[in-house]
Length: 325
Image (cartoon, rainbow, N blue to C red; front, side, top):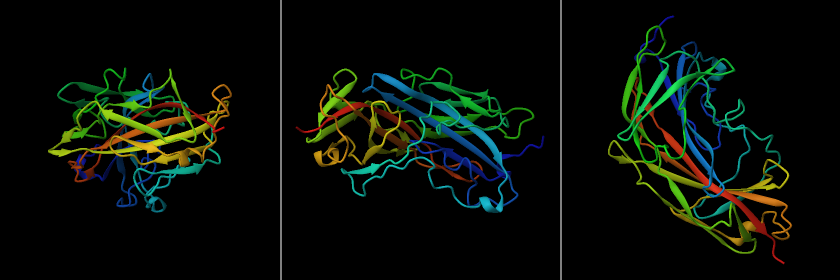
């Protein structure tokens, strides 16, 4: 097998976050030359909690490498999401309502349809090392049923999740592989943990009158990490997805832009959504979710490309909206 050194090829590094697909992993970058193979290096970090912090639905650190030989008709950036788009307001501290015509079938975490799950090829060492002052996380190359390869952190859990830590990225050298080893010091940070302080759930859900404002607030449990002398940036989004009790997918949603510590979702916003006649006659349930996306300052990779890395932490739970009498 022919072996390429880092400086000989254009590279792409994509960090997939939120509920969007792994944008860029299926398309080449606009700067690529037709006929010249790209090597794409994709990493993803996410922790998603539900039931108002009482359950973990997703916990992973994963990576993938693959080669891609671009064609002329591929020379456009990939920017459109194939999933359902929820609108966001143009101003902060506001919400926007979206009717969801067809959200599609539910997707199982880790399945082939899961847009958080990334896949690649066996073209590098069988481990990737992420090194912070607190711990070393080893991502191990795992063969998938599809024939692809993904680097995975075995045993990812909430207790060991690296909130607020800054990592070096190290790909070891190996014999007979396409990708030579390299190290990037202070490559990226993982965002802080957070806790929702209001509302206070009754068990695993919150009951709220539809004609009243709702104050949603939280606080960070870790300092915002500093990477190479620059603080990471924090972006938060609040989602309220409404579904029928017997349906897996939402039919409408609110997208809100909060402050650093919370937002008041006004009664006018709730009144745009389908409520319930009473707590005893519950027909719809809203999944209220706070997404915290932390972006590290970009660095220049050894092959000359600027790299930006971000991570996602989500928390929230069920909300039962009660119609006014």
